[in-house]
Amino acid sequence: MSINVQHPDRVRAHEGSPARGKREKLPEWDLSDLFPSPDSSELADAIAGARKDARAFEQRHQGKLSELGGDALARAIIEYEAIDEALTRVISYAGLLYAGDMTNPENGRFMQSMQETVTEISAHLLFFALEINRIEDDRLEVQLAESGALRRFAPWLRDSRVYRDHQLDDQLEKLLLEKSVAGRAAWNRLFDETLADLRFDVALPDGTREMTSAEVLNLLSDSDGAVRKAAAKSLGAVLGANARTFTHITNTLAKDKEIEDKWRGYARPVSSRNLANVVEDGVVDALVSAVRGAYPDLSHRYYALKAKWFGVDQLDYWDRNAPLPDDDDTLIGWNDAVTKVLDAYGAFSPDLADVARNFFDNAWIDTPVRPGKSPGAFAHPTVPSVHPYLLLNYQGKTRDVMTLAHELGHGVHQVMAGGQGHLMSDTPLTLAETASVFGEMLTFRKLLAEAEDPKLRKTMLASKVEDMLNTVVRQIAFHEFERRLHDKRVEGELLTDEICEIWMDVQAESLGPAIRFEDEYKYFWTYIPHFIHSPFYVYAYAFGDCLVNSLYAVYENAEDGFADRYLDMLRAGGTLRHKELLAPFGLDASDPTFWQRGLGMISVLIDQLEALDG
Image (cartoon, rainbow, N blue to C red; front, top):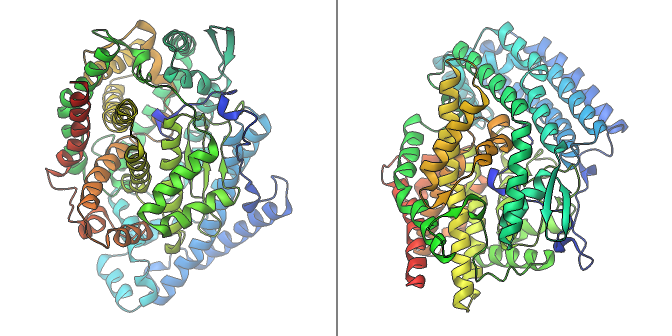
């Protein structure tokens, strides 16, 4: 029931952007497809019904699962799925309402109330997964053999039972669940509201303006170097002034994870994430090793090239995402952006575009920047019986068009996987990025093919390389930051300066000698939400980008039928693992050369830029 799916390098928003001018009204979502309002009878009835059903389910089935026949177990799973979907619908509504304005205390209170309510009801369902994991393998094989209805849920049973070796006593599991609302969830909320409340005074050419974190982050890609510097200095100063709070949150959550990992017997801090992603430790280690080994060829080489374009030996860190000197920084209106993305999707597959069009024909997207709104962008699947919702902060830049293509890919994937039902529609994070990154690539390739001006092509290539570096190199650097932080936290609480030192080490290693840092940059780790909400989430972005690079290379050389196989992959949801999903395309993520192929596409784009520069 996770809500806030964001990309750390997609956190860009600027209130008052020209994209929000009088020419176009940006769409806002309508959450009434979930519930009419927080005080609606429909919501109250849903909660009361779920509570009644969960208690009855517990009384009827607790302690009896291994004795059930296959068909009876299948019926129990169907009951469980219905109750869990009802609860997910409730918490999705609360989370999306909260994301729309995190500074509204009523939204915060409602979110906390719903988390406590859903957790209380879920406690009556907790036994179910625990008992399923205790069914002996040979007994489960008999149950599966005798019931076609149960075999439909075989993928969910397979993925649930991977946690068998890390399962605790039932009462301990119940205690951890019930305490979570006053533990990790409360610290997550403190982080969100602290960041949302911060204000940054930025000295702009037309005077000093007070901004939110999302607004000031957006200015780091402004065309004016003085604006970028002012934004960076203000961001670093305010984050530094609040670093003690962020340090305390980080230390507390890292210790909380260490304690639980120890009780559950996880070998490394990343192990639980790998298990949840249904990906082997060795595959992730190979990805991380390949990307870190490619730093000199990718990020170091590109930023040296960009420094040359700017006429300097080193880029100031606030110029890392700066537009190129030849970039005219033309803003793209919302309607134009929608057309570009849908055309790109439709050129690949009309069926894909038809699914995507639903997001624009209905109020499923929240686009404008508002005070208190969650920064960045995400796609939330809610439940299969409703539909996903997308949150954007659209500014009219080319990168915002790419963000639209990315989040729309998530949304389309979630709609198409919905046919698998609530329990099996979710994909592991490593595969959840496939459709989003593929959607970005389709959009980029179409726009590039239409660009005739050499300067525009260079700008587009550079922008794509930077997005790929942000998705691959930067996310693996984030992963390395988390690894070092969690490893060192075992030795005791970390001081702010110690966390900052880890941050600066991994930044220097990943970005290379062509980037010059200043002191305030050491606090930039504090605003990354994934470190707080989803430890070790970030490598999934690099996994997805490299996977899609390899997949797109197959597409470029494929005969008819690729699109159909691709759509089948999206429809599979969480029923297949990465080996099974990639096999129809002749790809294997466990092959040591797999990652090199994906990284090679980034290297080729940098080669093309160097050739244009020559």
